[in-house]
Image (tube, rainbow, N blue to C red; front, top):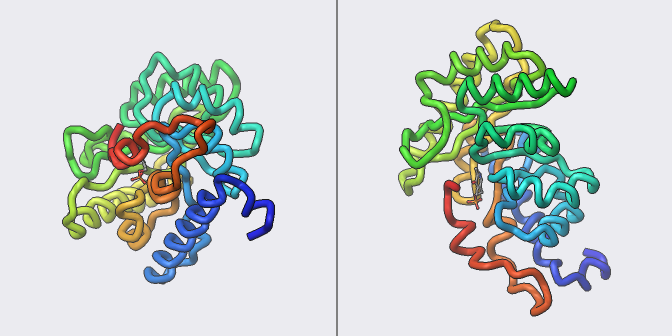
Length: 261
Ligand SMILES: *Cc1c(COP(=O)(O)O)cnc(C)c1O
């Protein structure tokens, strides 16, 4: 660590980011995978833009926001730093235009109607968009995502739409301490990905990403083939309180532990 970093009030953030990367790398090695195959996405929901900017400057180049409102509020400061912005929460169809201004990828596509709307808008504005199909592998009613039974068909339909590039699949692991249940959900997403990529349907060969695993279950997800893990609390949650004149963080512990927004 350099003296400049030592002087920063947010030096702890860089350390937690490094520790999170090491945790991911250890999980990859334990699974016999190359750590370079797993990207870290910082799930920065409800974190003030100043904090998120520090994380980007510390090397966090992939960010996910849960709401279009937060995406639009933070992106003007974060996009110029070179961060790649993904939407990882539910997208209402009336917020498609705002999303497209900033999002490189929408990971939360779970209906054909939403995908069609994104596609039409991309056609109208002459641009491409990466998308993932979000799948509710646990079946928990509180979670967004397509039914696993319907997801392959949905993915094929999405992949065929103009200007959308289907890059993979996203899920939120089951909210339980039963590791076998959590892991089975991740296995299911991987099997789905393999089936879709191997289907030969137009536009599906690019659908290789598996966005799965969060602070509490990343090891299981990496063992099952995650290519992107989305971390909030592991990077942002346990840091020391901000300086008195710093940003008001609110109850980050309670908020960040919420698994679904
Ligand atoms: C909050 C959130 C995360 C990160 O959760 P942590 O448990 O804080 O790591 C990842 N993905 C989604 C969709 C989230 O809402």
